[in-house]
Image 1: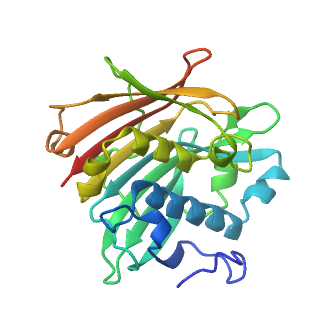
Image 2 (image 1 turned 180 degrees about the vertical axis):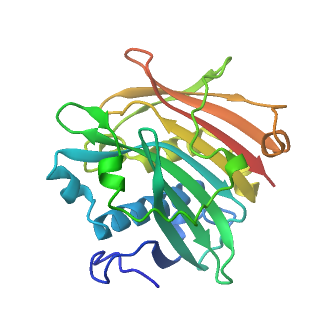
Image 3 (image 1 turned 135 degrees about the vertical axis):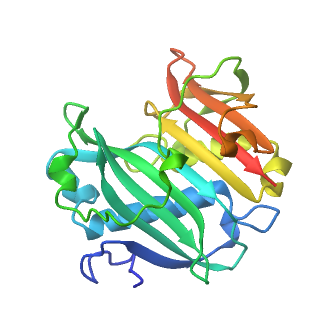
Length: 270
């Protein structure tokens, strides 16, 4: 069943949120296919709409002094959909792991095949104390979807990333108006665009399959300057890692105090 993002609560409670969306011009690159930041855009909007549908959206959480903060995300792209192709964007909560509330995602083509799969880990944070809370009090009231999993266990989705050696600085970015969201910090999708801007555009355009992992470590506020660093990564254990045509690790550090704001890894297959 398709859900209505214009009226998330209008069709009753949905265990799994689903929207049918065409791939629009603003979310493709010169290959005529959906970009990685476009994938994150779709998933962000689906998660927001589904949270509202389930009664744990932004305004619902604010009434109890709580807020959702995305902490980690892993995305596996098996095929990048083409311009004007219609796809089903799906998202659902699937329990918790320690302090993390887990949410999965899929993009399915018109034949019902999952062409993009993802897992995210969220913190529920006390707005006044700025401390994470145990997620059970919220997640106990949400669908568990125990029979649904976007990623297999061996994919190790939404895991912690380690700091890499030999990172080289590329550019600096200052957090400006268009980077910010309602909460006043850099939006999670903007990090993906910053990373794409560090990459060789031809590598991204040529890539048919991708794996992208990101850890959001500390929020970036308006006016903060971020140093973007990266290093190629090769010959790692595991078939997905070792067989990538290209693989890179990234880190964003606050220039003022050298504090890590995010870490990410991107693997590309032609």
